[in-house]
Length: 229
Ligand code: HEC
Image 1 (spheres, rainbow, N blue to C red):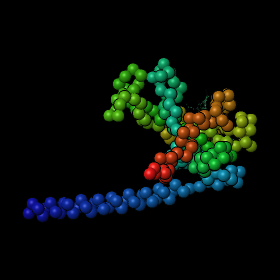
Image 2 (tube, protein in one colour):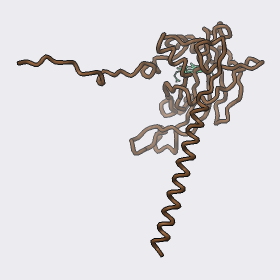
Image 3 (cartoon, protein in one colour):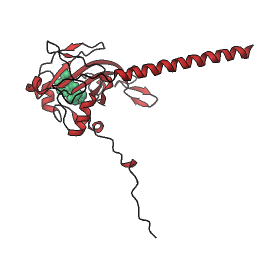
Image 4 (cartoon, protein in one colour):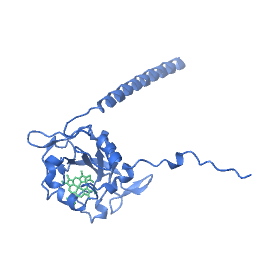
């Protein structure tokens, strides 16, 4: 009696597991189908997911940018800025896959490139005055809730006055972020990038270690040695 009950339960578990695997497979294939969404625009021939502006020249919030290429996460925590960092979050930076590939090939960001910077708060509660805490991996800062969205767009026709890039803020707070955002005045964003950025308005040195292809030296075939006789 007991064993029969157990076998029955086991069978139910197997059926449930099978169902779950089915659901997961369907959702994965659905989400990868959605990831293919492209927005073409003749003004940006090299770009697969083009920036879209409305009639008021506001930039629409780029969709699903978390599926783009993640190129880095500069970080300026309160603990290292007297508790007064303007952006105390991780600055997660994404770029469209086509822009990433074009930069690798030519060393230039094509027209229509969008750099998306999503802010991600430090996860608490902090255990030390500098805001850090312990994790099994060690003492440090760990990513928590997301908290804001900034975007820069390269378009020499629209933003020629600010070295070809326009800057947009979709809020510095928890999502939902704004659906559309106006270009910020040069004094608020572009001016600092114009003076300080490393190359073409972008702080690219911070992303270069990831922009460059991974060296494969160790995987190359071993050199053939002449065997001494
Ligand atoms: C005082 C200088 C300064 C101002 C003002 C400024 N930025 Fe930046 N921005 C930086 C620096 C430095 C980085 C790279 C390091 C970091 O994120 O801390 C950066 C990175 C970025 C990036 C990632 C791509 C890149 O260029 O490296 C975006 C997008 C961005 N900023 C948008 C904005 C927007 C939008 C505004 C205005 C709301 C703005 N920035 C104002 C200095 C500035």
